[in-house]
Length: 133
Image 1 (cartoon, rainbow, N blue to C red):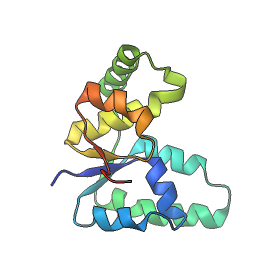
Image 2: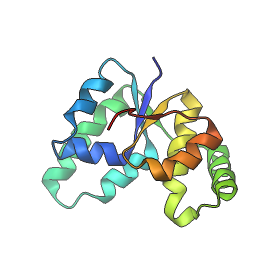
Image 3: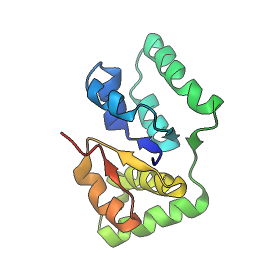
């Protein structure tokens, strides 16, 4: 079974106690954290309590070396894909980097924001999930 890279949209649902059906579907799948997702999650933190919760959530990824940090070539590839798809980097750079990160380990990207990811995933041959509503 392919590993998972979970987009911010899914993490937000999980952190708000929603979409537990997806938690069940992800069990027994290796999960990786793309550093652009980590950045987006930190950007949404506004209290010390939530910061501690986020750091607790993220620590296993670091501890188990399951964080994907884009390399210079990944930024280039993301830029090329954005240009090919006619997408603005200011709005879609993180999504492109998330897809490039996932492709680097053969992972599926889980997102609830499929419309933004579809052109990127097609160009990079990255599978999008989850495959249910």
